[in-house]
Amino acid sequence: MPGMENGAAVLAAVAVLGYLLGSVPFGVVITKAMGLGDLRQIGSGNIGATNVLRTGNRAAALATLVLDGAKGAVAVLIARAVLGSEAAAQVAGGAAFLGHLYPVWLKFKGGKGVATFLGTLIALAWPLGLAACASWLVTALLSRISSLSALVAAAAAVPLAWALGHPEMMPLVAALALLIFWRHRTNISRLAAGTEPKIGKKG
Image (tube, rainbow, N blue to C red; front, side):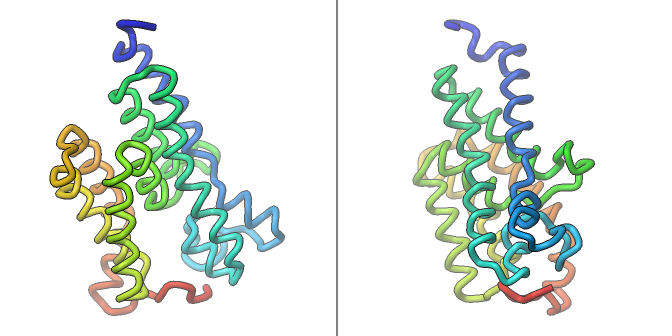
């Protein structure tokens, strides 16, 4: 489709497909399939890997982490391969991220988007994605607090996009980072109060 890769109709279709891919609630599907119960009734009720880990099943948590990250990455890679457009790739990744946060299948009550955010960044620009992952990992090793690690990674990703030569990605990265902070607002309150649980603590 030469000349149409950035057309409004094409980008709208990319956004819809990216959203539907991102809205697949892998954490809920995996925990139910493994007989671990309804994830929304466990721990924080969040559908992401950190809450899956509270079931005590590390394999389920790892699978959720990988698949939630893959949602953003696959959306980006498909859009780029089919349309050859970085604009479409960014739209697909952003839409997949929104799908994870607000999935239609769960009445728009989704996760906090960290794994999908990191997967999206890796597919868009792997040095940026790996740098954001490294900031998450270092913070997690030092603090043992998943939410703090997520906030640090999200905040670091914006200047990292500029430093690593991807200024065109900064608006998208900043928008996704702001949504991560918004979705972590209760965690931020607990961090301030010193009551935020450590990684792996069972709910």
